[in-house]
Length: 186
Image (spheres, rainbow, N blue to C red):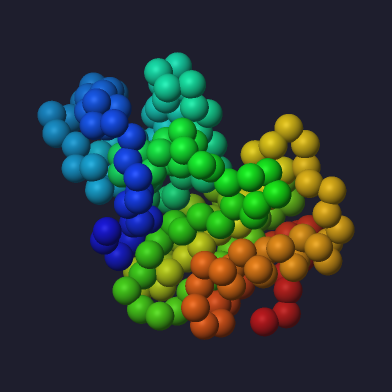
């Protein structure tokens, strides 16, 4: 994958699924061809296009994709990775969702934690403006995925978030965000 795209799926949905979604996206975006690695935004997509795509995936495959898990450079490859995850062994409700929105070429990692409400889409513009050599991970609130929010104390939540981050990143990543509307000391 490119320096500013999430990693490709390890297991992909059937080629027919990729072809059907590519055809749907071409029609929706009014383009003749679609680079599966390119950002859908670069092809003219907007948030309404993504909502239509999510609805199409749910109608066609019975899979509910979460807008909050799509990166700031969402591509067909990324959508297919989420589809593969949802139809295979996806994360459990106790797992912390750590999504890589930008896979940088350098060794530095920044993890952004969700604001109050749990949705990480507020970081879209920020991540787009960051140096592409920086790997950027986001943690959305696990309560957005399940029927109810996990019954974790703040300390348990922090421990789980840190464990997820350490499990995904060698070294010491930087962390940021505005949970509870406050900034944390650096």
